[in-house]
Amino acid sequence: MAGALGVSQATVSRWECGLDIPSIEISHRITDLIATQIRDELAIKSRFIERLSSVQAIFDLDGICLEATSQGCAQAWPLFSRLAGRFLEPRMIGETRIAIDDADTRKGIIKGDIAMIVGVSTRHLDSEIDSAFKHRWISRFWFHGYRVLATLAYEPCDEATPVGIEEIFRLDDVCKR
Image 1 (spheres, rainbow, N blue to C red):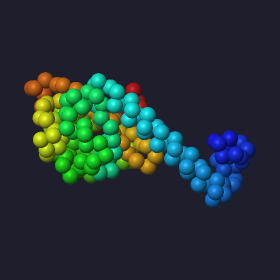
Image 2 (cartoon, rainbow, N blue to C red):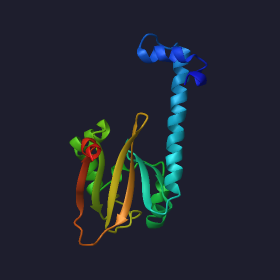
Image 3 (cartoon, one colour):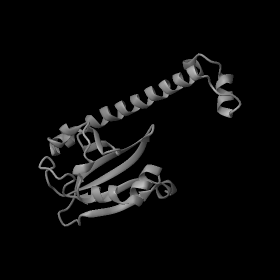
Image 4 (cartoon, one colour):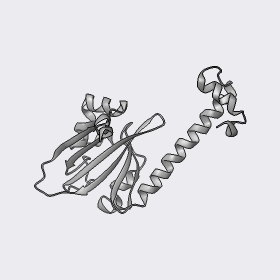
């Protein structure tokens, strides 16, 4: 960071220890540096997902905006995959709607207490573009700067599998393993 900002390592150390603060100009440069790294990280994750043959997608939880879909997702739900950049929350139904509408669950996700949710659904949107078929979905939540994102993986499941939320993994439980 010191090299990128044109300051000494000792200067950065003083900032980290709270002995000094960066100037307004340096603060703006720090913000730009971090924002660029965050933007690049999401772009890399999106390109990674887009090339997978498995059925996966990335969503921004603010308004449930579809960020990226895999090739497998485009094959399973071709019209849905074209909704990148669109806010889907008003059209959500079923188990994903239940998970997002539950105040404690949503709060747990936003605070970082909930790491994953596993559910079984037949549809996620109230639209014909979301073809109905029974599948298990696994949602992993992560932070990207100030944004909360979810990577969802979808897989087939037996028709006899009951629809619903199967499991909610809290971060503390995941880290204990």
